[in-house]
Length: 195
Length: 258
Image (cartoon, rainbow over the protein chains, first blue to last red):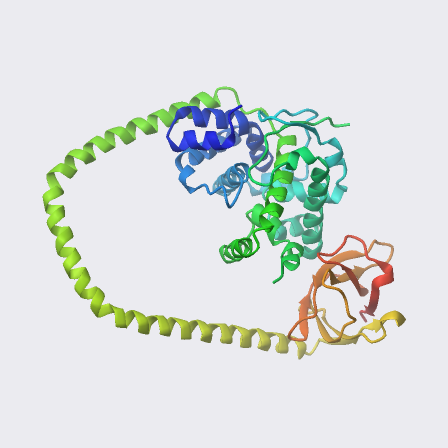
């Protein structure tokens, strides 16, 4: 199976196959994030296309020593979505949408190579921890915006966000295969069985 | 800041979430250079969030990939055409460009020699200006705190220490008008490096609300969160980074708001 590094290398050589493989691997999770932020399928499609184009055009700016490829791409996606949201004055609509519960897919397959069960991982989160993660990561809110939106003190938001990520990290550590090798991301296939 | 302080501060999580200011981001990257072992923390945070993203993935719209590839081919076509035009133009102007470059080099060398002394002076001025700015910011901050503490509506309340932490001597500066709180530290009980003090808001018939975590402030005073309609604040000693629920045996003391 082709590695992430090989895909990056193909894109750097301006080989169209690279962006095609990248799209197959990451378009779905990025589209999920963007959709949660914008709550508008047409706009989300446009933002996903812009995101992938930015990745293609800015690949020289990607530094693997600073961030993983997915983190880098999700930052581009989040910023592009936020720009669009501001441009089209979607704030009011977003507020309504933001109170909706995010539905986790019962089964997800990523195109990389290891399988793992993460049902317990997500169930290990308290409701408040899951909520703060959704707002911070999937909806692109700042900590101050979360505090304003949910009426939690800023200190509580900080504590809960850190604790939530801590719970995920701790649970993932038990999935030793996921963290095999400290350098580079191991391939994985996530099979999420939401029980 | 030590490595455990960095881990407890939450800066790494915000670094991955891209929620830091440019200055904070530069600071985080400096920490990562200083402590390469923190890269493992960053990778774990990234993977944790990646799992979350995978679990909420949606099938991207059909046909979008083809649109994307078509756009990329179109961009590549424009670039090729643009490159050819540029090449022809470059041929025509290359001799003139060479002459200009030589002239610029000679002039540049001349001015470079003249400007070296000036650069050194400017660097010294910049350093002095930074020092002045930093000092001014510190003084402004101290003045701001002083003004808050002498505000007419300011209440100065003494923390009631628990018997097991009787040596504690703290004052709580509470102002319902400006909606700000400060803790003035005269003496705090000892704690280990792996622990921090944590403030809590206590309201009747509600679970304690976790607020700021802090170490003993060097200036002796620290601003903490203000929570509306809180009759009592409490301080505990908790693991570094704070907890969601207080450790009651580590309750240092409480202060009632009048």
